[in-house]
Image 1 (tube, rainbow, N blue to C red):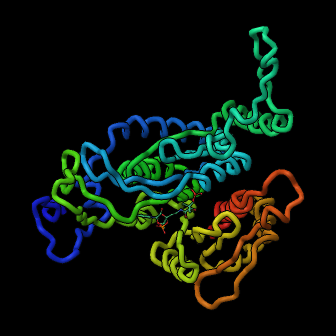
Image 2: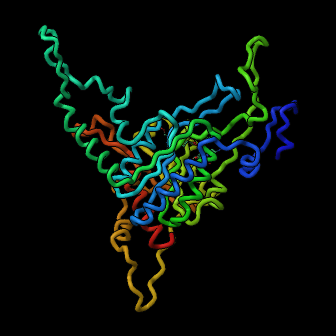
Length: 374
Ligand code: PMT
């Protein structure tokens, strides 16, 4: 409530304002680019609906929390955006259209293969004719990397021609929340054909603008004490209000692996969406755990009724992916681990990415969601 946000109010205890999603959006300003972003998403979604494509919103990268209105300092989240950028590529490969909503300058599909840290572009170019004194220098691609580069470039050009990738950027957690709400609402026109894949690392705490210093915080007064408020958990309104029948996948990040499954189960129960994917910070590239509601057996078809249209999808869902290991635990949630072999054990030069299996599994589940009301 606006009244709770009086910047002059003191907090003798470490007690912060509790924002609901509603009071958050009523008191925090929308980013200036929001209207333009919404218009671009509307047009993209309309094109994908006409092309009969499923659409996935992938959120990716970390969110910042500025400490000043004229921002000099901010808190950040660790994510480089690997999970989101990699997954977006596999969704595109699976025929989805992708709205890739990412932190500015974090990794992006396709270009991620040649980022300054993963594979510096200049390192695989070779210089010919250097030192020959003729003043000309030729540049060629290193032969070993030619084929890899060609594969990435071909996939990228294919996606560009199909117009199936739309990119949006955010920086702060405030940008993220406004954008997430707007894009979810736009995408909800596709109902069950829309998937929401929330891989961004979202800050749990922030400074409301009413409590922020306008100018750079001065250091003259010694140590700095900041009291932050809790960012409202937007998964709840997302499930209940912003999306209609969409297939929502959230990620749960922990650093204590003992907490991973209990917290993922709790999130599933609290928000009532379709899948929580748990990942531990240190092992997230090798294993993740899928937590979802236990599936009801399919109801028998009424006599004389026809099989649903997409029989292929149904058959695929019945076959569990080989890498998935179910964990037999009582309760309402089904828990299954997805693991890939460590790089040393693979013979291929191409490194296996766990996102390939995550996306394959979700595509199967989404197909079942579309056809069978799971
Ligand atoms: O980019 P990488 O380096 O590859 O790392 C990928 C990843 C570890 C960041 C990714 O796999 C991941 O786990 N992303 C979710 C991180 C996160 O925000 O976890 P959380 O436990 O704080 O939040 C759980 C869920 O609640 C998230 O899906 C988030 O979208 C949602 N949330 C979070 C905060 C908030 N205020 N509202 C929310 O709805």
